[in-house]
Image 1 (tube, one colour):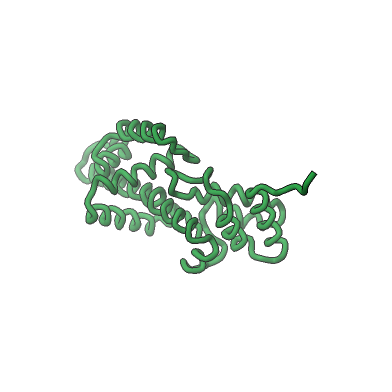
Image 2 (cartoon, rainbow, N blue to C red):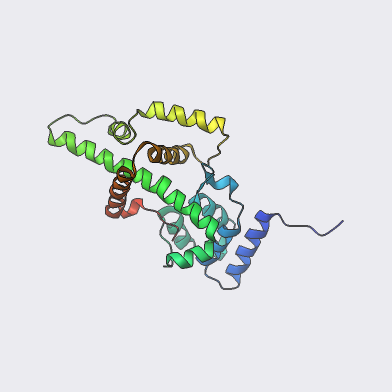
Length: 214
């Protein structure tokens, strides 16, 4: 019998653990492991990297070699333990994963923030007019942003996902990313840019809702 060959997954985990044990900071070793890890099961819409899911999966294998409080703060709060710039991050995580991360950042994190920002506008608007609060202000926000009701959009998403066999780690993240792509197709560049600016402004004012890989 020939030597046991590690699977790509096992090889990546082994290198990650060896790097941390040799003294490399666990966060930098994690980014390198994410670069090499097969991403298929952590892709949303075939394009956006579910980086929190992937990072958590890798970190779970580390056991006691990690500072647990620091790692938990990173995974649950999206607060990196070290500051690195975009160029450093791109080099560590690789060009492909870097672009997949940006797809997640704008297609899931920023898109969700846009809906929260518009929901807040709906609530404020009705309050200023002396109207009763809507039971589903979020639903009204979806109509304003995408021009259709949530149930109709979700139905379209499910049909397209089934037709194209689009896998996703989570339905909500997959739906949010689909909404992002839908909005890009429905609106002109100026409207898209305006909405993105609004979403980024909301994230700036609500930093706890802005988890980041780096």
